[in-house]
Length: 184
Image (tube, rainbow, N blue to C red):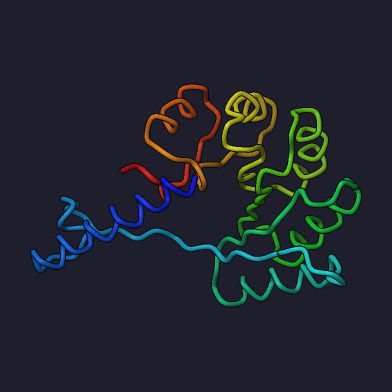
């Protein structure tokens, strides 16, 4: 929670300060010997009053036009599977088959049957991942969903501590984990 985030802020500041004192970039100070690249994705697709699926598609297409090879949109706020599917269908149509479509549910679902009902609607549009389908404490449902959908389950954005990531990975609750976590 808030305490772990505060500790993380201090932890990050101290690592940064130490690297600057050593006159090294942080990645070298931490021991990295290879500087590779990580592909970026554009994140958007928020729910806004009056935003139609077509408008969402235009937004996602604008990111692809900027050169992004992956775009992420929000899902899970609507309770109507038809309305959610219309959004995803419009996004996929707008970006085409060569841009990755990432879905972020922001802990939208509280049970596996609901998640599966929506995922079955999403799967035909070839999403690359579904991020945070359940709350961070619901490792069991992350694992159960990962077993039952062909879409990669991703989570960890609000996870805290390496021990929690270990639990998540042991349970096979995610294939992609967010490395931006608090671990003092």
